[in-house]
Image (cartoon, rainbow, N blue to C red; front, side, top):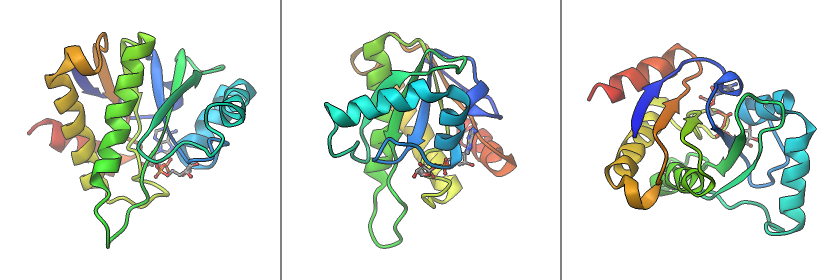
Length: 176
Ligand code: APR
């Protein structure tokens, strides 16, 4: 499994699956969630609504992941995951790590060979950028180390930092 950085707009990243930093409702929002629904079109929301009417009546819990069509996006799938809201009192790092693990597990299940991640929880959910990036890279490296069992077939993970701070944080973390 190769890891690389592709700064820019996740919705334009040409991979098999893009990961959405969603909220539990799965019914859209701002940030990358808003960009994916705006650019991907109504098919994505329709698929999310069907999930809410069937397998996810209470929404998607933080740390879990679910796949839908990518609609008009260059990608084939959107893997929605819900990051934890950052809390100064409670360590939610494991939930954030779970977003990356579960998204890659789902990617392996659907046969995605390349997966692109935004910096989950580092926007509206307030996670400090450097720590969000550390957790992202460390978790993906752990999955890569036991590749065959946890994300078979995933050959490439692309981190898509949005803005200079995120980009330099990823470059620093990936050079360790
Ligand atoms: N491409 C790549 N990254 C993006 C894009 C984009 N088009 N838009 C925003 N980002 C970056 C942000 O700059 C941040 O670094 O994605 C990271 C995650 O930020 P958010 O999208 O705000 O996601 P998050 O912090 O996980 O908060 C999720 O925000 O949008 C709502 O519905 C969403 O309620 C949920 C919450």
